[in-house]
Length: 501
RNA sequence: GCGGGCAUAGUGUAGUCUGGUUAUCACAUAGGCUUGCCAAGCCUAUAACCCGGGUUCAAAUCCCGGUGCCCGCACCA
Image (cartoon, rainbow, N blue to C red):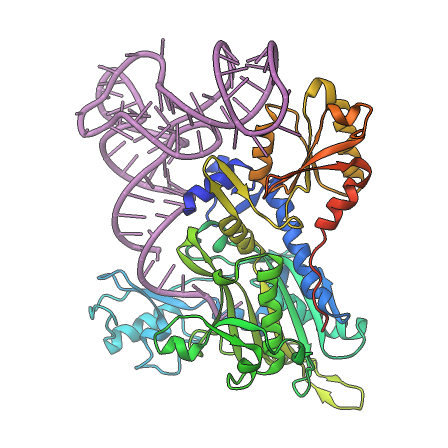
């Protein structure tokens, strides 16, 4: 589906909508409605089950969303988020000031005010790199972090975190003690991050307030054991950076063994790349042929990332492959920077007495993007029918309960709906319109099971206390005893379990 | 940020160029009758011109400003 068509459908069903709609909306802010909120929780829970559940030494924490200025100064976000830009008044192209001044001032523009940069441009006669005209503007700074006044005086500067990862780094020394004082140690955060994007675009794909699910694995750079033998035959759809620089974005299905061998990647990295890939393929159930693992070149990736693969899904609504998550080997950059910034030594002493500054492997997911991808890839029109083929364990509503004839069967059906809800299932009771229309609504919401109470349920005979269970994808119907119903649905609602590390 | 396009019920739309009726139609939603396992039928109801200003006897329609969305460029640490 096209982006507008898909968004209209999601809006109509109350999955999500623009925030502050009655005031005309606010750029880059969206709210989730009942279906979206429930779906998001399921996606996040599935992520936690898959990533945090992979090891006994991985933990989920819930830190605040506000960072003191010293933190973002140390992390590099303060300077990197405020790159000055100049615009060519002639051809209307924007450039980063340090790029434009590369030749005349190779040391960069850090520490210069915008008028000072403008003076250099004027004095050196710097021209527009694109059209060659003399029309470069005075630089403007885009602070991509939201700054806040903190405390009574408002003199203390704080920022909404631009990524959840920083919260995990700050927690590392405490988690070292809370955990088993052993590496690897995983610290996961699922929460909001905020970026004052210049141009929010494409609904959930570039928002100013969005959710990140990130697992930071702190490990000993000399030793990160993984059960690599178990996975070495598995093939991954990769696009290596070298191949991209040579002009091809074609996927090469490469075995884990080859990526680690001739491919030159560490085994621990390949293992986790595969673990992440499996989440998208086996948990979110994105078709393998619509997924690719795209390696970022040295120019594209952040300088501190030693290895960087994006996990991308091919989305019709957005015109191609788009990043949903990533696997980043960040080295010791983060703990080193925060060690310097805080004046604390963040290295740890391992059993045996060796002291190490742990390296970080970061596994990320953008839950908002995942939700859009779940809609793009699984929400399909089949003639008159619209079906959201979500995996049963991700569906916002587990089961719909319908009386075939409201007057005759409502009492029993309502009681059944209450019983299923009491068993911990999300239930939707619907008695309006024809049974076919109710099934159709259920299909559109992605509800995997519809339970219909009919005359046989109430009558004496072999079908007493049984109901029709209608399955969303096949439209097939089976007769199920009410006593077994909750257990059956619960089974389908279990998240896939990860292989343990 | 720059450039282009767009904005009408819950959703999709007609009407805008050429100002003038009770703002069109479909689907959806709610109620009734009927039916009773896949969006059936009939009747009824709810429901919209993005916001602000201007021109005019009269503005959904023309003009200005704002807001938001889409596309391209740039940006995405």
